[in-house]
Image (cartoon, rainbow, N blue to C red; front, side):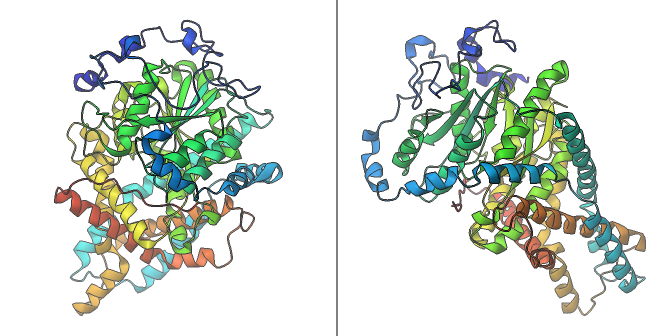
Length: 579
């Protein structure tokens, strides 16, 4: 590990000086199979530690040499913000608690898992669209380039590397699913012996609480069957407006622990926002000696839940890593999907079709290939606790895409040690087009900072920089904008400088169509409404709207890059998500 990163962990190993435990917990009593987590019989904490709150004693090892001195505050109590508790009394919907636990039900959950286990990405939408578009474009393309020829040759050809990586990812996903299904075909229910800690940081606003409640209750409903040793850490800032409601949510299950980040908490590098909360939870795990190889941390956003397939896929992955021995992976990510019933805005739901397909293609190729140079999502991110302890989340005050920065540092320190699995998590699309653009703006803003971050090796950020170019210049390469410019200059000729470029353009376009087509299939497949099927008009609509969706993505990306270029003050924009 580079010396500059090692300094931020000074004193942490002294706090957890016991030798790492092996698979059976030998070598460290605190990491034994019965020392942490929760008993499967009645759900009570085996360790005797309170389910909520956290109050380490300064006399028990949290010294002034610790990077985050002073130590975390004592458990947060209602008295600290009684007004929020009182205001929340009239807002809680206890009916939603029962609805979340029974959203699928045993029979529907079994059907959903069976349906999802049969999914694999299809080639035919890519092949058919390529052939059709090639014939049409080849027929109408002029044999010579116009004034726009050189610019269009560069802009419309530029994404070809991303396209080829994505096609490689499609092949890899199909192969990975085929191998996994063959390996576990006759296996019974999987019960993973490793300790799983689900970390859910939340901004703690009233408008984000309903989605948080839905997500947390899904963890309780589906994870314990495969993970008898389970804990869910809800991480909030001290004094957040929905603290009372979140505290009562934590009280509903002994599996949930409330972790409150004190106002005075500062990281060594002054990290803010979500990364600050993640780093506090990370240091807390090290302090409690939970940074071992057989402890896994599942990072989830506060609007993203799990389903019956998620727990099975993660448990199988972790057991496979135990059997792999020295070749085991340390990090993995699955597919982020968007059920139709979580989407009040059908337009943004269709626009988000691109994201699950991207997980099954580009992210499968890179993260599944061992090195996540395309970045990572902040949800369904499964990391070995001992590995996360080597990286942390203290990336500085300008970090607003901490998951991608974590991915690039992981690529440097643990090359070839990441993986992809076929499990899904269930999120919600933005409720409005404005929120959709603001979300993309923050992503591009943060990723632009990573591209120009010289503390990260150029080889690890090169692919991200290459991908960002198409995003930032998205509005200029939009087909509608190009045709409008052609009309204004009275030369609507869009031919490239060479006709040999046309197949590359067609391949890029076909891959984009595939992403929206297959992504819609994924999102519809996890939806309770419609029995996992697309409505007849949705595939047609999503393809016809691709230029519009591309413009929305491009506007958000361009706005984010301009804010980075102007060195505007970083803001971590958290949009409200439907419940």
